[in-house]
Image (cartoon, rainbow, N blue to C red):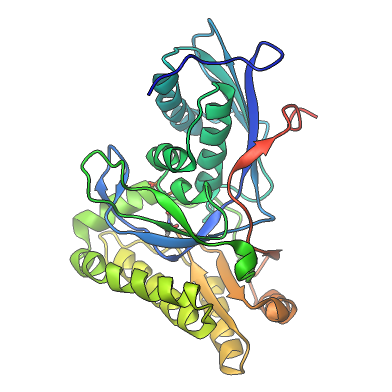
Length: 342
Ligand code: 2P0
């Protein structure tokens, strides 16, 4: 439903929000509708806490175009995606105003650290607030999904499931929380093995995979069982079960993508060494497992008591440049306006 845009106390259409990246444990890869960004499969993720995107959005009545800065720089390709995303909000609010958008990440962008998930979740949250749209979290999740699939999940905190959905218009392809972060406060060590932007983005990688990988139908056919296993493991706080299903889903997604033509190989040597290191730690009895997204960074998920040992072991792997450490966090939320300008 459209409603009149409502200005803030200063007479402006201005708001700021923060969202954090999420990491899928049961992976999303492939679309059933590229235009609406509907996934071929459901997925389950954890939202992180100490990595963030903060985004300030100001709609300016009468302004024709959007002005977008990311980490203090303008970026043509990203600006186009931001404009497409803001168009969805402008449509809801029935306005055609351009916006000034400033966004900052405290972690490397576009290198497999889910910067588009936190980025578009923060953008939708801030943009909706700036226009005074009163959207439910589910509505924000649907809009964030249209901007970048995995952003649907970063609207929520903790353990989150994003449904594949059945409807052609995608209104049922929405994320929802499974378990709060505090209910099972696992930790994540992120081994940074490269700071370069990836060569093949996720959307292109998914398109190529669906068109050429012979494993695509097996991937889609086996996902429901993986989701059900992971859901049960999370609700039972069964670490071993979650470890098994998460590594399985990760390796299965990469095998699927590697079998595309030309094959998608998101790992480097250090990524593989880190996988072996994590498995060796688990064999020694440490509660830890790995997952890797469309980039070379390895994420090691562990019980809180294991985090220092996991970090030390990953730091020791040749080719690891840095190891970040985060807990699980909350979903997208408002920030004081001006915090980014300071
Ligand atoms: C995921 N990834 O579930 C999977 C696993 C990467 C590997 O979602 O095209 O940036 O914007 O929907 O969400 C990354 O893809 O792709 C991703 P689009 P997105 O986290």
